Structure formats: C-alpha cells, structure tokens
Length: 285
Image 1 (spheres, rainbow, N blue to C red):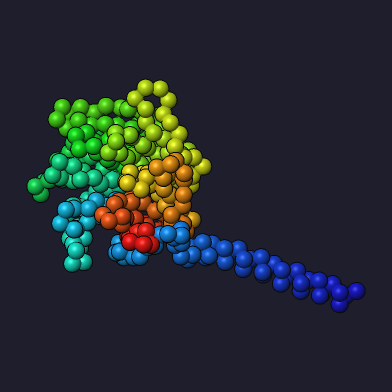
Image 2: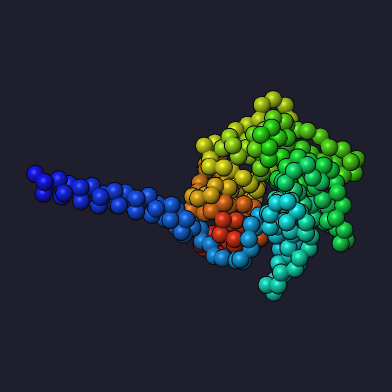
C-alpha cells in the first residue's frame, strides 16, 4: 500500500511538471511562431532593428518615412533612404502613430495626449490642429482625416485652407485607423469593438467587418480594403476584397501596424512586436 502511494505521488509530480512545462511552452510558441502567408502571397524582411516601428509613408524618391512610437516625447520620425541609411528627421514626439503625405509635406500625428498634429514641410514642423490621442491620419488630397484612440474618441476632418476642424463622429471606443479611398468612401476602426465601419454622411455607419482582434489600421488599394490587427500575439493582415469577402493574407504577426502600397502590387507592413518592416507581395509578382 505504501509502495503504491509513492508511485502515485511520483506520477502526480510528473504530470504536474508536464502541465507547468506546457504552460511555459504555449506562450513561447506564440512568441516565436513565424509569420505565415496565405496561398498566393509571399513576404520578406524589408528593414529590421527599428524599435517600436509604427507609421510608414513613402516618398517619390524611393525613401520611406518611419515613426518610432515611444511615449513621453521620446518618439521620433526617421527617413530610410534607398541606400539603407537612416536619417533622423524629427524628435521629441509622444507616440507618433500616423503619417500621410499631404500637399508637398508630411502630416504626423501623436497619440500621447492632448497634442498637435504637425505638418512637416520645407524643414519646418507646423502645428495644424490640437487633438486628443490622435492615432490614424488620412487624406483625399484636400482635407485631412484623423481619429482619436480614446474611450470616447472622435473621427475628425480638417480643412487646412479654412483652418476648420469638423467632428464627423464622436463617442468612438478606441478609434485607431482611418482610410479615405479614391472613390470617396471613408473607413475607420474601433479597436475595442473589434470592428471596421464605413462612415456615412447620413444615418448609421455601415459595418464592414467584425469579430476582429484589435483592428488598428485600414488602407485602400486596388486589391481592396486592408486591415491590420494590433494584437500582441497572433495578429493578422486581412483584406476585404472587392466582392466583400474577408480573407487572411498574413497571420502570426506581433502587433501589426501600418500597411502601405509600394507599387507593382507590393506592400510594406510595420510589425512593431518584432521591430521590423515586412514587404508583402503576390507570389506571382
């Protein structure tokens, strides 16, 4: 009887050790699992070792503007040259999270409090308007659009000619991404709600996708509406195709951020959790 008891204790100990080991193994698996591309798509590393990489904006000369989303005036804007050189452009920012090229300059948002949205041109940073935790920014070439990442945030439009700020929608729960498409449609995300909506000038906004894991960024392209998930583990790059079907293009990312078109069907995706930028393309291109 005593021998049986010892054997049972030993089996229990082994089982306990196995459970603990599995408990540690699962987070490690999630942490180190490589990114997976859907059939028909491929990716490669474009740039690495960029801590807290967040927003991206391409320039006509082939260089790339990149933000590092540090808080408390420790954030910065960099320029990645085609040669691989990295030039500092603007410092002392608080969670710079949105970039968009606009009328010969670059608009930079800050999510780190009640802070100005800057318009960088001719070497000067001009404050355009004050926002509260402004994250995503977009433009149709004439107006700017911005969204606030707050428990009760706003979707905004700004006319720089009239210096007029208009609230398009308020009461949003952690709004993060905003996209203005060439055909005039305006999309936005609410991270805490797990959905993407299309703004409507009259009536309720249209639900485009739901049940997502922390949707953080949206972008229009010829392929459809792109959505990235800002989840710590298991984030995805999603595409709402022109026929309305939602497909997963990349999976197992860590804190995916901005996605931009690079030309010829190629895209760049900031993967903040791995401090890098990925280049995404269709496998036949």
